[in-house]
Amino acid sequence: MFKTIISSKRYWITVLRLGLIAMILLGFVTHIMEYGGITSDTFMDDKINNGRWVRYLISRAVGGLAYGMIQGYYFELRKHKSNR
Image 1 (cartoon, rainbow, N blue to C red):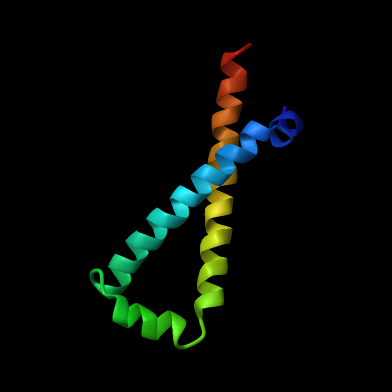
Image 2 (image 1 turned 90 degrees about the vertical axis):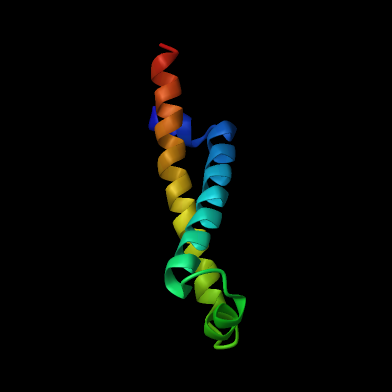
């Protein structure tokens, strides 16, 4: 079951969609919690001008991918079980 789900194209499309949504939502919520609102000047000074933008993007990408893989597998597993 695991191998068939992981090798399906539909699973990876779901992973990309969920991962992208998670990256956007997590980035937005974290930004508001960390900077107290939508302020781009502080964010630019903190993340981009200090050279921490690579670490920021990699952490968002890895987090979004992990979330997408877990949730995508859960959704595909439920579809497989309901089709039996």
